[in-house]
Amino acid sequence: MGINDKYLSFEERVERGEKLDEHLNLVQIATLWSGDHKERKKLMNIMRWEFMDGALKGVDITEPTIKIDETSDMATKAFWAFEKQKLDLRFSCYKFDPDYSYLIIEVSKNDFLSWLESSNEPKPTGCLLERWWNENRPSHKTINTYDNATDQGRRDRQIKAICDKAKLFGYDVLNIPEGGKKAIRTECLKIENGLFTPDGFKKAWSQASTSGKISMANKEKYLSKQ
Image 1 (spheres, rainbow, N blue to C red):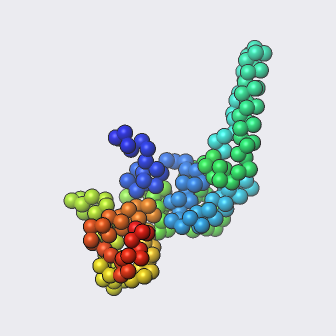
Image 2 (tube, one colour):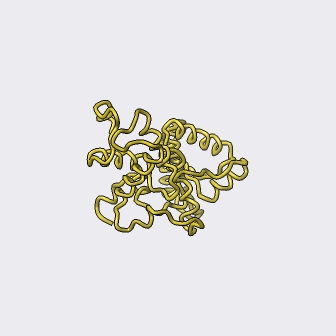
Image 3 (tube, rainbow, N blue to C red):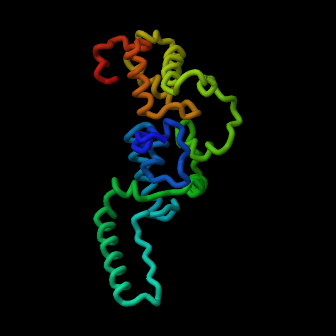
């Protein structure tokens, strides 16, 4: 791992195919679940409420778990009591801040799947979250051409996928109509091998546009949005 790899965002690490942890916080789960920011916030709210109601099992990583041995002297006990109070006070500052609580509530993969099952909800499909429970199992489906393209880099495979999706819609890749980019993005994010994240699509589209492989019909209008 290079120095720069240590500072990659969660989405960038997922985009590179990094193995997901057994426990993820609510922000990470929602990020993998949906590429839409409003939908992510909705999902985080639902999971937070379910956690608070006890329906979704998880861990609040800020709750102090200080254990004092019965043989500890009074000074040690007093010190740890003071430390616990500081931790409790720090926690209370963020306890009712939803944006912070999304980050401090962690859920295991098994608990998340159990929650879905108990709620009669199907597992999310067509999103990166599938990788959480599928990455350790070989796929029963035929590996698609993007995985077999060993002579291409990941960004090249993304650009090829964008162009392929554009052609499936019947678009001229150098004359994409208004609304076409959004339609292509939606389809690209559905690719099951996790080739795209929302940020990955944005970067791949920008590179494809810069290199002249794809272009909007009204390029001047969309140039600032690449």
